[in-house]
Amino acid sequence: MTWWVWFLLGLGLLAAEAATPGGFVALFFGIGAIVVGILAGLGIAGPPWLQWILFSGVSVISLALLRRPLKARLSGGSVAAVDSLVGEEAVVLEEIAPGGVGKVELRGSTWSGRSASAAALPAGFRARVERVEGLTLWVR
Image 1 (tube, one colour):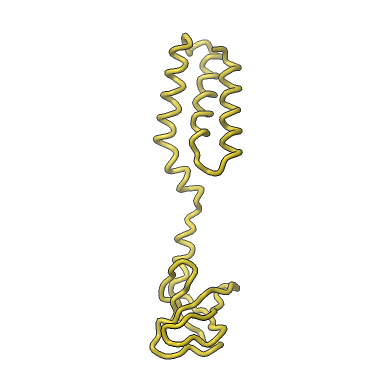
Image 2 (cartoon, rainbow, N blue to C red):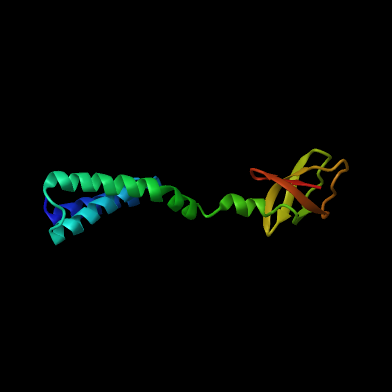
């Protein structure tokens, strides 16, 4: 195939990746097609059967080596951000019975708070976050 066909294929795959939610699969096949397009443009890609092998090899190798680190980098470590709430002080907005659930405020946001204390937590009390389970802060 000619170099511009590989470029069009690569751009089409990159557009497909941009139009679909974050799987990061078509991205690497698009990159593989563009690499083969560059090699074909330079005249070093060889016959069409070799171009297809190069396309497959570059795509699969880049997918295997780069997909996981890319997904990890783009996920932004959101779990670590929530886990960093442990040890901070939250203000109880409504009284929480022992083992009960109520509302607490932390960093300007309202959260569900569950009492980890044996005593009731009155409104306005500053409670320490002991753990985070989903969107619920366990406070004492």
